[in-house]
Length: 225
Image (cartoon, rainbow, N blue to C red; front, side, top):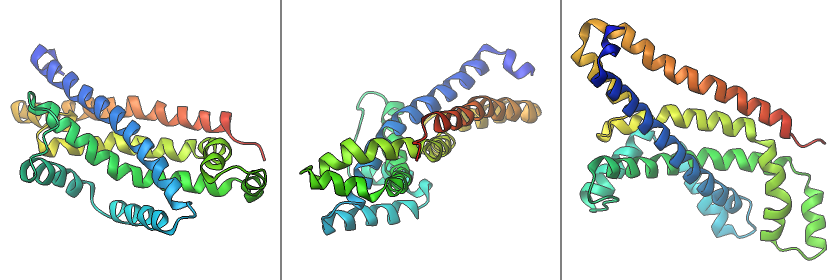
């Protein structure tokens, strides 16, 4: 563990995981917002919206995340000139990574929420329509609150996968944890195993309790039928 007695290596390690936490937090918010919108489209009575939601899910769920991240960098940024930060290249790559992670993860969030919507008895929607509630009112007031409680555990698994997928953003130059680990191994070739164990152990120390937390929340907030 002598490699981590060097303050420079510690700083590299901490910086890498801070980027992972920032990526995960921002992409979680983005994917939830987009996923809810897509789920609403998938159950919408309007065929065009249903078709768009279905196409989005089928395309992004079956496209490798690495390709999406590469497209965000080489397509949106390099080819189209979409710069999300003019002052800091790391910040620009961070936001490009957030966009890629969000649009990819939103497809899985959408399907999880849609499965939750299907658990809500159809009679509740019919009763809402009978008293004059619109589709939007029925969805937001009656359906989604119950659906959200029913899919806490699946969403937890998706967000844990998102945290691990965030390491892919290192392929476009962001110094996140996998890039930091690679740099430390290149500079300290005789300490490969300790470096690997520290990085893998950090992920495990964060994500295992997170999985148990989502499981507890799922049992705690489950809709009683």
